[in-house]
Length: 87
Image (cartoon, rainbow, N blue to C red; front, side):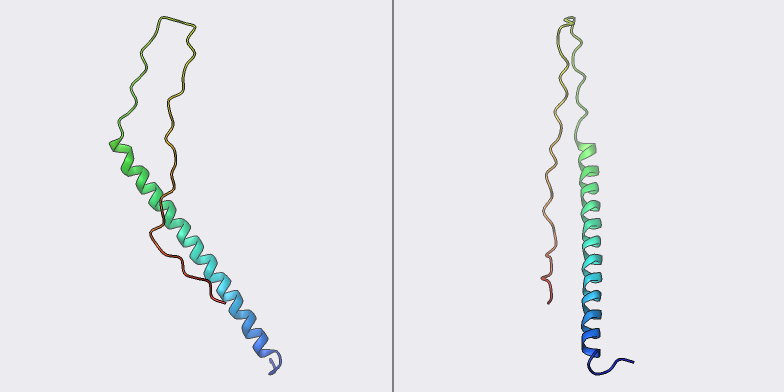
């Protein structure tokens, strides 16, 4: 059994552990939601962007091949507000 000296300290420690677990679960959920949104955005853009045309075949063998431009990844702004930490 816990006496009156240890009980408040134990309850406080349990509260901290529960708070940390909830924060970790919230962070995990937010990361999953962000990944799903990014995947949906990629799928939405894929059909609308035309495939790049093949470069014309040149007779000059001295030309060096040029890599096609890559799309830059811009992060999407979060659609939710983060709750302030409780102390």
